Image (tube, rainbow over all chains, first blue to last red; front, side, top):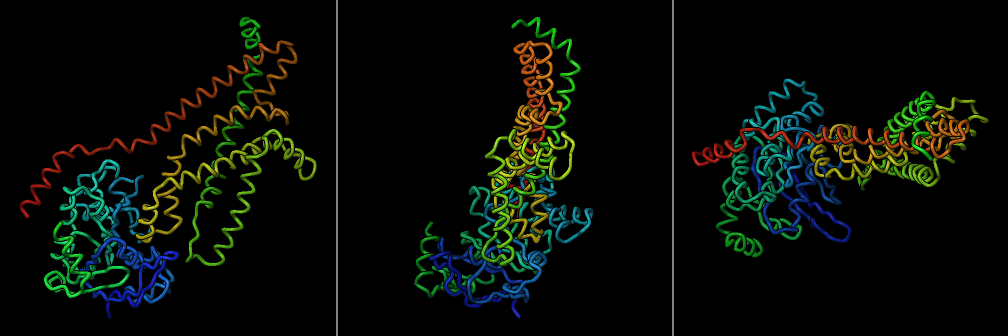
Length: 243
Length: 253
């Protein structure tokens, strides 16, 4: 059984059809990247996977649970972490407490254990020297690294990245991508929406190309980047690779 | 009007003035605090959004609550506190229970302030970036914990100047409560003026006392506001060194 099963998912925002029947599966431990032009429904689909967004028809199963029939939303979401484009760190908490808060409130870990896990993960992302800093004193890259540490501190089974580097200054993109790279091969299933083409080619097991609300093409990075079959994929790749 | 006479009145009647000051401060401080609590409750509930996937019951309750809270806010913001005070005081006094005037005064100030505070708190909550709420929900934190630990602390900080302002307004506006003859500053001043027949001098002293009280209050509030924003100044010292270390690390890898 796949860890994520998406079947013919459709969604409208008022009169705008953003998802027009999306289907694909993700296996446990896979790194899947979703690429494609803006407005193609990538982020919407990603946000459907942890119920931040609802869908109109079709079905999504995540870790064996049908998203329309989830009873305990909080414990479901604890298993599906998310890293946002805008970081969304808690502005009223320092770096350490950002990583501890959900552990103690949602997972009911005790303070010492949560602190230990938070420190471990902050070290992984290279932010252990900033545990007392507040988010508004950090750079974008630093904030995003903290946000990643916060997400992995929950020991999720799946981690969703919603354009994690799109809001960053160019010189900070690499530090965040390096952190994401370091998470690969830890058995964590990752779904990444990104415009960093070289990066997704490097780390993904599978690429999903979405355009205009459908999966136009999917396959291994090699298939997609060296031998794209769909005309829209070709046009898109020509554009982004020229840039 | 002579300043000498003012001083004379103050020196002679200061115990009466002092009693007035005490009552005024007591009533307005307690009233503001209870008002803030009402505001947190009403404003907090008003800020909760129902969306398409909320249950029918939730949507229905939200509608009812919105209707009631809107009525409450409009009525108490739209009528003078003086009228509210006499109306509520006598309504309860003659129909329910002969209650203490100070209790009545605090009750009136509280619900009056609560109406304003509800809107202040609601706008403070709405000023907190939605992304943080989403992040908290995405981490599996319950709505209530998200509200209590992420949203409200920031909302209160955002709204603190407006909340403090309500306290200052209450120090002044509690003067209308003389209508139910509690011994606040304005009521005391009236009695003093009535005995001395020195109206302008007495009320000049009164005005000075009000000004002094509001100035001190505003000074204290300013201090508190400053201490709330300490979060902007805790840059770690190793900041500049660290970025060069991390760059070196990346080159190695």
